[in-house]
Length: 478
Image (tube, rainbow, N blue to C red; front, side, top):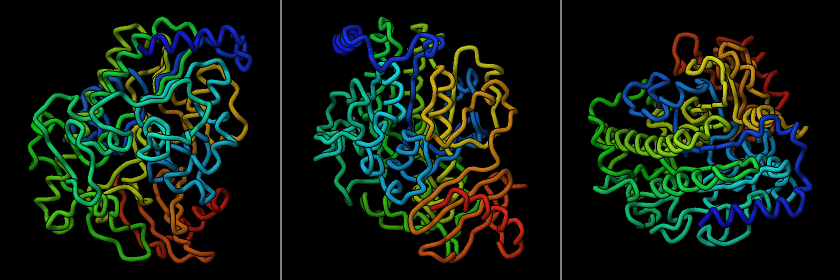
């Protein structure tokens, strides 16, 4: 039982005097932290106006918390987006762009990472599921052997005991323990079975049990729970598919593949890591509808699992003394710009849900339209917990937006990607810069003034706008 492990850790804290812990006043009210990470969830929440997606649990929690409608990640891929979260810094060095970003410098800064910082200040830290890039936190064969991603920062990092033999199998799991066969397994699956037919049901079960055991823990805790869906494969119990009429799911406005230079790519993860369908979804509308249907089903499935965790929090009275963050590591294109996946600097890849709750939040349920970034989460949590933040953090605390949803945050959000691509998103515009070498090869400009999805615009028609946005990004670029 985990309670034995937690009790053992608590005894160690008492014996050692918790040398790295701060005094009680720095802890403020000693709020616990529950951090929930969801993989590849785009801004498709009913609470954000996406009417065709069924997300009652996330919507209900958003009504008690602060939902940010314009949250942007720093990098459009799992590992490096999560590294930016853990570091609280932008990926302005190319070594922080791949999924292995955390491994590049983990020994140097692990103790100053998000969980490391809280552990240094007296928190017990636990990571369940996919929180950093590798579920369970190990990076070796099958992701079941060392080295660790963030050594020494978690009191325990693990995945549930389940029918899937390795963390890698669980990450890409099909029903009842079947692993993915790269290049062969299907992109989606509907199975007649319970929620535990797929990995997230196991993660939710484990999280519910851990929360019951954490109630008795005196030390403040930081519990991170990482769910796998709606990441590919789009797999879920059939009952979640049955929630939808496939023909009612709308097609994106702009599915045309842009001319170069552009952030378009060939959807390699989708096309190469799974079995090839006889047709391309950009050319076969029937197959495209299947995929959007499966993504919606996987979204509703993970919504239910998150809801089980949140219901347990409420039942145990933990919401009265816990800060809760629900975050997705990036969005996902479902045919927009001719892309099926993330890995671009377009709006659909960089925008993802962010929900923050803390006890006594002002004006709960009011959506904030402030521009915020993933790197703002670290300083927000230290602020709310009453801790001094590491000086190297590049984000800002979102406490003002938690008090007043209309409060201004920042002028722009920034992101970087491979092939020398950078982007800046302001209130009304997005500029994408293509600089594969030292010289700028071209721009993409999108106008959001009259369209929430952005309208592609000729940069040559807005030279002043491009220059001003270039000034912003040059200050933080490579």
